Image (cartoon, rainbow, N blue to C red; front, top):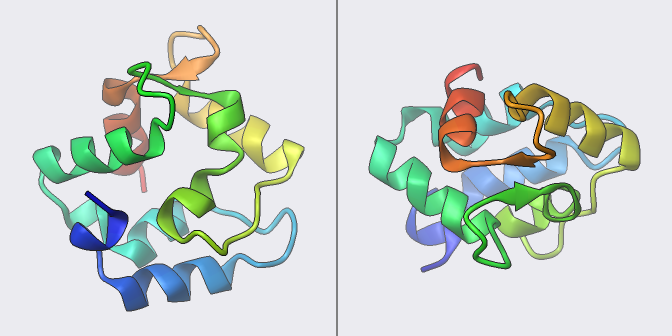
Length: 110
């Protein structure tokens, strides 16, 4: 399954293009722009599993740095600052990774 099976390709492209500048990424706006917030819990879970590249059941910090590429392969990597900010927003239990429930919360806050 690919991201475009769940979200509109044009919405994804526009969202990625909106955050091309380094340190401009805003996950709340991004999730809104790609239409993730409007998706069912099942679809949000599917997006999580696409972003969980190593299939560990978590999105670790190194995977988080490539989150935009999970939506659009030609997208840029997040900066270290953006990655740490996103991890801080999503990692509620402080274990250094985001599980599916934390991802749901992150999307819900957007």
